[in-house]
Amino acid sequence: MSGSVVIAAGGTGGHISPGVALAEILSEKANVFGFENVYIHSLVRNKNNPDLLQPPCEVLWHNVPQLGGLKTIFYPVLFLIPFIKTVLQFRRLHVNAVIGMGGYSSLPAILYAILFRKPLYLCEQNCVPGKITRVFSKFSKKIAFSFPLAEEFQIPGKTIGNPIRGRVIPEHLNIRQNENLHEGKKNTINVLVLGGSQGARQLNQMILKTMENSEIASKYKFRLLTGTNLYEETKSRANDGAEIISYANDMKPNYEWANLVVARSGAGVVAECLVFGLPMILIPYPFAADNHQKANADYLEKEGAAVTIHSTSDDPTPLVKYLLSWKDHSEVLREMGHVSLALSNVNAAYQTVSYFFSEAK
Image (tube, rainbow, N blue to C red; front, top):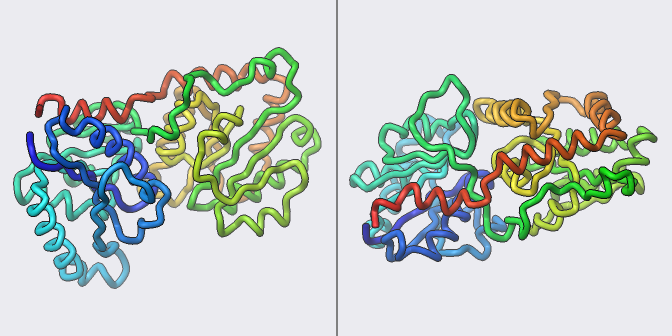
């Protein structure tokens, strides 16, 4: 295969980060897989996304409108101009293959591949496949899954793992459980709290209430990544036992610091926790599309890498219960960490690219 390959990675960070991970591999080994150039196709509003500030290849920006509200009626008209621009640009750049990472923003690239009969490849990050995967799977040559699909979905493909950016990958693969912790020599357990972009206030407030328990405050040290918009609010309510951070561009030091993670169950964060061998307390965002975060969390809980709290309130009771039960039984966290590491795939990006294109050389 010659010409160029486009990775359609717009929408949310959950689509962008694994797309950038694939772009890193393809940019480094484009000739190996038979391509002259590699491009990322993403929304203009993502220009300030940290993963796209120093991308591994050129980013082609587009501005396809989001589907929803009154726009639904006029969507075909609103979509047409950005799509025509995409077609002309892709033809000029000799795009001969498309990788769709999901989300509505990948539509122009996917439709280009179908219209001009170019090979289409899809990446599905979640246990519940998104609409793009469900609708366009029959047009794709191959599909790579990050996690096994929920039982009710029968879509052919290969489960490989979620592609992870090179700068996040740990230097040494081992569980993030200081052995002193399990020998009784370490007094505290480090808890990293990741609110994510959706519903972070609930997690922030739940943690602050949890820390009011004196037994927990004496055993656990918390680091909260609050999100920029909620930093001041959370900081003003926190006590001295919590480290409050608005945002971290480099997540590796935070994962290396942690012994336990409390987070939403988006595929990207979960995959990164797995490669660091971290046990997790997952609180799925209940309004995620198709309730996919619940399915992700249920899978990891079933495997033994996580426990799940299904809640829409900041009531700390279930979280307090888990933390108190582990206070003097850190061996439970160690076992969960081993399961996390066993479920991870640090080479998912390379293996996904190889799965797609090894026979196309």
